[in-house]
Structure formats: C-alpha cells, structure tokens
Image (cartoon, rainbow, N blue to C red; front, side, top):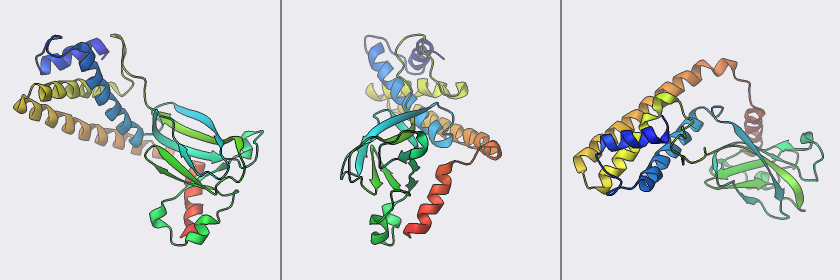
Length: 230
C-alpha cells in the first residue's frame, strides 16, 4: 500500500474530507501508526531492517551518551579506550541491568578489556568511564526508524500483510478527533487485534529461522558479564 491508498482506506473507515481533517494531519497519524508497527517488527526480528553503524567520540570521565534520535533498537555497542586504527581494536560491551547488580565494587572496577553497557530510553551508560577523550572510541550498531511517509507513492517497509493496520490507526485517530466513540472503539479493537496477530505471525516465523541464525558475539558477552558482576 502506498500513501495515497492508505489515506483512502483511512477515510473509508472513518468518513472524512480534507476540510474537516486535512491530508497533512492524516499523514501525521499514519506515520505514528507506522512507527509503532515498525518498532514491534524490530523487537521481534532485529534483522528485518537494515542495521546502521555509527561511531561516536568517548568523552573523558563521562559514562553517559545519547542514542541517535532515529534509534528503534540497539544491536551492539563496541568500545575502544585508546584511539582505534582497525575494527579489532574495539571490545564488545556486554549488557547489564543495574537492578541485578549484587556487588557494586565489581561493577565499578570493570576492565576496559571487558566493558559493559546499560541502555535506557534514549541514553546508554558505559562502564568503565574513559579516563581520556578518544576520537571514534565508540561504535554503535542499531536499527533505525524508517523514513517518514511523505509522498503519495511512498510505501511503508513493513510486511505487506500488515500495512492495512496503518490505515486503521489513521482512521481510529480521526474517529477520536470527531468524538465518534463507537467507531473509535471498533477501530481500536481492530488495531489491537491486528497487532496481536502480527506479533504471533512474526514470532512464529522468527522461531522457524532460529536454527539458521548465527550466534551474536554479544550473546557471549552477556553471559560473561553476568558471571562477573553478580
């Protein structure tokens, strides 16, 4: 479905005109629904979208850094505490949850050879903190949010069989703005049921592909860090 079709489908589900609900406002709602669905797809199957690689500078005595604004899911963080010249100079940071830490001293004395990272919302915290600034000392692999739908011919990059949910989202938001309570509740139910259907289908498909997927080095890192910290 392209944008033109999505708009038409939304207006069929909640009758409206460009006068009482502009195309610009409808496009905002369609993108909100699109981003929600894309995030769900990325959570279930991190390999569905193309991964991005972003290098960042380490700041002396600073452990807190911002994620790129278009981040949907972080795949891996790599750190080099001295100026890297090749990719093998980086160390893969194992993930950890501060709430699970049982020994703060061990947490604070993490080696630069085995760094750890905690990711929360739009930020991530690395340990140990760099003692000096390092240009390109960090490397982030992540899944970025798809580009917004803008032009009439734009097509969302989520599985085709779930693209109708974007139109449903736009329609239910229009119904809400028109205070059409019954129609809104009906469409909200379709939206939620559609999400559950999508989750089940994608999860089953991902499970079938599990044996063929290569083990991520980060998975080894998680086990290693867990053993060291608690």
